[in-house]
Structure formats: structure tokens, C-alpha cells
Image 1 (cartoon, rainbow, N blue to C red):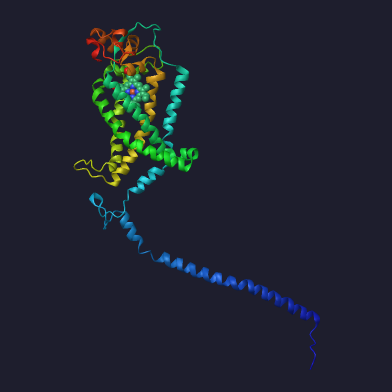
Image 2 (cartoon, helix red, strand yellow):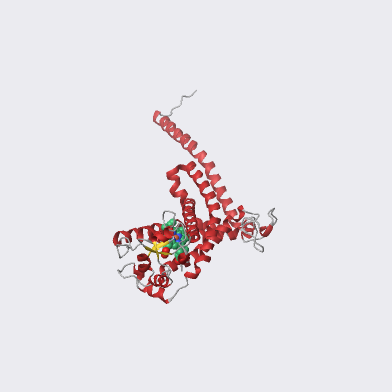
Length: 371
Ligand code: HEM
């Protein structure tokens, strides 16, 4: 047999190249299967683009309100998809809504600034004569305080529900917030209707004092005396109080009606003839309730400030029913003169009666009326 004459160098070259070939093929062959798969997928995607999903038109139609069969009865029977829910969800998630509560913070900062720079509106005469003027009856004060306390409870629970996820979960944890949220919603649902009755009573009792007059325009022209030493003339209610009253009669009524729409499913036994509750109605009510409620809470801070730390002697009126004659002359001069003409300025002892704190008992004869 002839012995191979292949040189050593040639044999080494063949060995190196075959090793290289084996390694290259073992890498390339699995990749080939990927590229085949990729080409196939692209083709499928192109096919999918070319032919529209036959079901997409179906869902589009349903979103636009096409009716079908549903087990729900009433006005919303056979509505397969409630499309305005999208608008409501967009509203709930809008950045504007999450910034709205800053209105309340802004108002609190403004009031604080005013108080720091201007201080309390004190009575001009440091000495009190000891004579008082009847201003609010027992029933008026009862309604005012039930409504005011309800308002505070509703504001706290309402804001907890609005901002709870952002503000309270970091503070209370998820389980703590879940407990607080469930208390909040129950308190809100029960107190809301009581508050509404209070608002209706306030409107009925006080609308007569709050029709605007020329005196109010002059009061506004002088900035309500907020920044000056002089106190502009005012009748029983001044221009600022009348604006607060009409806000209550508009924004307040909007909050109450929208709140009643939202709470209605809890009381199915109460039906208003001709009105059927549908989801879109509740979504609109929810938007009105949140916006009007937050703005009203901010404005109410102003009223609460003026009624307490802002004005010396105002709180006395709503707590005892009587104001000092100095306060009446300074803040409501025209009303004071009217009361004086009617002989209704009385001695504090006469107003106090047998109970401590004047106002617990109506004074005799002349002081029973407050206007
Ligand atoms: C909790 C804090 C509150 C305080 C300290 C407070 C204080 C007062 C005071 C002192 C007055 C009498 C002003 C005067 O004699 O001229 C008054 C009147 C009034 N308050 Fe309040 N109040 C509070 C909350 C509220 C709330 C939450 C509401 C409404 C939801 C409200 C509605 C009214 C109305 C409608 C008047 C009569 C104004 C008018 O007829 O023009 N108050 N308040």
C-alpha cells in the first residue's frame, strides 16, 4: 500500500479549517430556525394589517350605544356598554382634578396672611355698655350649628375619599386607609341628607334678609371695610354675608342635589315620579359634586375665619343669640338704628334670664324679634 505523501503542514491546515467549519455551522444552524420563525411572524403581521379584525367593528358599534340583550331592567335595559363611563374615568384621572384641592390650601394661606398682616377686626370702643341686640333666634342657631358641624364632617370625609389614595395610604397604610375610607363613606352618606335639610331651612329662614340693595354696592365699593379703618354702612346683613348666602343657595344646592343623586341607590324605596336613575346621571352628579364641594369648602373657610378669629364679637351672636350694641353699631349700623327705633336694645341681664350665658332664654316681650 502506498503511504500518503501529504505534508504535515497541509494536514494541520485541514484540521484547523474543519474545526472552524464545525463551530461556525453549530452556531449558524440554530439561528437559521429563528430567522425562519421571524420571517413567518412578519408575514402573519402583514396579513393581520391587511385584513381588519372582523370583531373590532362589533365592539366599536357597542361602544357607540348599539343595544342588545342584557338582564338589566329599567331605563338602561339592553344597553350593552355604558360609553360615557370613559368621560367620567378621564375626569377622575385628570391632572386638573388632583390639583383642585389646592384651592382650599390657597384660601387657608390667604386667610393666614391677612390675619398676620392685618390682625383681628376689633371693636372700636374698648368698653362695653352691657347692652345687647337680639340677632339670631334659638331655632336659627340650632339649624346653623347642625348644618355647620355636618359640613365639617362632610368636608373631612369627602376630602379623605377624594385624596385618600395619594395622601392617606402613605400615612395609614393600605389596611388603615381601607378602614377609614369605609367609615368616611358611611358618615358621608348618612350626614349628607341631614345637611341638605339644614341648607333648605337656612335658605327658607334667611332669604328675606339677603336680597341685594344699593347699600351693599356701596359696602363693596369700600371693600367691606376689610382694609380700612372706617366701617361701611350695612343693614341686617352686609354685602359679604349676602354673597356667602347666595353661594350657599347655588353652589350649596348643587352639592346637595348631586349628593342626593349619588346616595339614591342606597334608598331604593324613595322614588321620584318620572325620574329614573341611570349611570350617566350619576357620573355627571359625581363631577358636579366634587368640583362644587371643593370650591365651596374653600369659600367656607373664609366664612369660618370671619365668624371666629377674624371679627371680635361675631361668634357671640351665633352662640348666644345676642350681639353687643357696639358690634351692631360698628358692623350693621342701619340695622342697629332700626332695632333702636323699635326699642329692642336691651340690658344684658334682661337677655341672660335665669340661665348662665345670654340667649338661653328669649328676653321678655320687646326682644323676641331679630329684624
Ligand atoms: C363651623 C364654623 C362656622 C362658624 C364659626 C360660623 C359662624 C357664623 C357666624 C358668627 C354667623 C353670624 C354672622 C352675623 O351675625 O352677621 C354665621 C352666619 C351664617 N352662617 Fe356660619 N359659621 C360656620 C359654619 C357655617 C357653615 C358650614 C355654613 C353653611 C354650610 C354656614 C352658614 C351660615 C349662614 C348662611 C349664615 C347667615 C348669613 C346670611 O344670612 O347672610 N356657617 N356663621
